[in-house]
Structure formats: structure tokens, C-alpha cells
Length: 385
Ligand SMILES: *[C@@H]1O[C@H](CO)[C@@H](O)[C@H](O)[C@H]1NC(C)=O
Ligand SMILES: *[C@@H]1O[C@H](CO)[C@@H](O)[C@H](O)[C@H]1NC(C)=O
Ligand SMILES: *[C@@H]1O[C@H](CO)[C@@H](O)[C@H](O)[C@H]1NC(C)=O
Ligand SMILES: *[C@@H]1O[C@H](CO)[C@@H](O)[C@H](O)[C@H]1NC(C)=O
Image 1: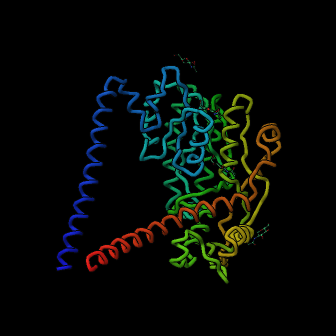
Image 2 (image 1 turned 30 degrees about the horizontal axis):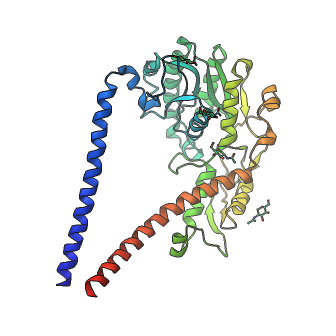
Image 3 (image 1 turned 120 degrees about the vertical axis):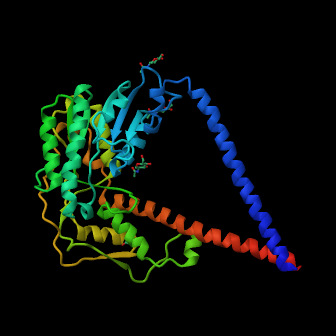
């Protein structure tokens, strides 16, 4: 009898949840219909721009926008919220699934809007894991040339001021260096374009094929720590007697300049503010070269001795990387070295943020299991007593 009772209760619970969900979706869709009716009076072409960040409730005919092309990347993802925080109205194209910039006239959807600045961050690119694959170099060349041709053409026609993201690898003979070099040549002939060069920008990133070394190591570090259930429930990392080891793809002797996304974004916004006075490529580097072995030591420190890095014998692909020019008036007056986050500070931020979301994921799983178990126990007790 108690079994049939349990089944009955479960069925009732299930029905309850089902009705609740059904009810919620219904109210949502009703809301939509009402909104649609209201919006029909609004210019159709404006409505088409809502997915790109246009806010119909604040848009005025004299509104002016900053357009970020390639906002789905590491830099763009941080730039867009920073611009909004500084009260700029922002339109964005996250990536090719959002708006394919390789298609001629793709950008004409923005024709009717006043655009005060374009950040051209769109690029077929990834971390060293992606770049080093040979078959990817043809893709990089072809796709970026298409993006450049279409976009430069549009920006020139409308005479829109823009800041193009180039790289410390602009002199490198790789596909990536080649397309950046070509683009810099084109822009040097345009009045309305400026160039920014990035060294190694790092920040919190979701992990996938195209990742960079800092978030990649942090993620591997978190995955290699055995987290007991107690810690999962508490939402904290355990102390380890021995650091867990993660593996570097190379011998770790390659030197880079690591710049945190916050400092990068500050530099980009300052460039916009002083756009008319800048007539040279702006190098956003730190001036401090660190090899991966130093980076490994910093990881050991910021992870509180939880993760060490093991290096192998493989030399990294030789790259021609420029020495950044950091003594221009722009750097001296606006983008100050003293304000940069150190590698320790920056990596600590990345580590803390990534471990927090990592633990939340795990914790919510355990909490859900715990809650369900508790409910079952309570029901069982009530059935028997
Ligand atoms: C835009 O126009 C409104 C009036 O329609 C005015 O109050 C506002 O100051 C204008 N904004 C700009 C940036 O010119
Ligand atoms: C942005 O606008 C809000 C509301 O108008 C204002 O409170 C805030 O101080 C502004 N922020 C900046 C950075 O100008
Ligand atoms: C970095 O930028 C984010 C977003 O603007 C901000 O919330 C955070 O406080 C900044 N961190 C530091 C250390 O500047
Ligand atoms: C990390 O480095 C700081 C100083 O750079 C030091 O005070 C701290 O004890 C170090 N932490 C670990 C876990 O080594």
C-alpha cells in the first residue's frame, strides 16, 4: 500500500511541476504578443537592429552609437559592457553567426544610424592551439581578406572613424601576421582609420578549441583538483599537500607580454576619446616580457599552491613579435604603465572568477541531489509514521 501511495504522490508532484512550467510559458508568450502589437508601429528597419543591441525605448532619431565588430571575442566581450557602463550606446556584431561580415553589404543594415566610432575587432583567430594547426592558415587568410574587403569598403564609403585591431605579430610571416600586415597597409591609406596592436591579452574565457594559455591553464588546474563532496557543498577549493600538475604544450621558454582585459579595454576607450590626435599605430603592450615558466610560477602562487605546470621538450613555434613602442604621448599622458594590473594581480582575478563559476556549477549539482534526497526522506518518514 505504501508503494502505491508513493507512486501517487510522485505523480501528483510531477503533474504539479508540469502545470507550473506550462503556466509560465503561457504567460511569457502572452507578453510577447502584446509587445509585438505595440512594436508594429515602430520603423521596421529599427526593429531589425534590436538583436544587434539597439534599445527601442531609448533610441532617438539623433542617437549616436559605438559599433563593436567582433564583440564575441575576448576583448569585445569586455569592451561592450565597459562602453555601456560609460554611458555609450553600443551596437555589436558578436561573430559570423550574428552577422557575416564576409558578405558584401552586410553592414548596410546600420545605414540609417548615426555611428560615432567603430571598433573593428572581428577576426578569424584563436589562441596558439588554433593558430599552430597548418590547415587553419588558409582559412585565416581567405576569411579575413573577405572580412577586410567588405568592412573597409563600407567604413570608407560612410567615412566612419574606426579602430582596427592589429597584433604584435604583424611582421610574422604566418597567415595571421600576413593578414594583419595587409590590413595595416590598407588603413595607412585611409583618413578615417586608426590601428591598435595587441600583445597577449588575457582574461576569463570559456574553454574550447580557440583558447589562450592563461584561462586554459586555470581551467586545467581546476579540472585536475580532486574536489571532495564536502568542498563542493561549501563552495570552496580543498587544500592540497602536493600541487596537481598540468601539462604545458611547450618547453615554456617563449616570452610574451601579458595584458589583462581591463587594461586593454581602458586603452581602447582612451583611443576613442583622443581619436583625432592619434596618427600612428598604438601598441597596447606592457613592456614586460615573461616566459611561460614564470607564468607557471604565478599560477602556483595564485592557486595557493594547488597547481604546478610541467613543461616538456617541445620548442614553441618561432614567431616574430615586435617590441612595443610605449613612449608616445598617448602612453605618457593617458594609458599609464603604473595603472596596469601586474601578472599576479590579473591572474589572481582570472583564477578567482573561474574557480567561483566552476564551483557554483558543481555545487548546484550536489545541492540539487541533496534536496531531492531530503524530499524523498521526508515523504518516506511521513508515509510510515
Ligand atoms: C536629441 O534630441 C533631443 C530632443 O528630441 C534633445 O533633448 C537631445 O539633447 C538631443 N541629443 C543630442 C545628443 O543631440
Ligand atoms: C551614466 O548615466 C547615469 C544615468 O544617467 C548616471 O547616473 C551615471 O553617472 C553616468 N555614468 C557615467 C560614467 O557618466
Ligand atoms: C575589471 O573590469 C570589470 C568590468 O568593468 C570591473 O567590474 C572590475 O572591477 C575590474 N577589475 C579591476 C581589478 O580593475
Ligand atoms: C604569492 O606571492 C606573494 C607575494 O608575491 C606572497 O606573499 C604569497 O605568500 C605567495 N603565495 C603563495 C601561496 O606562495
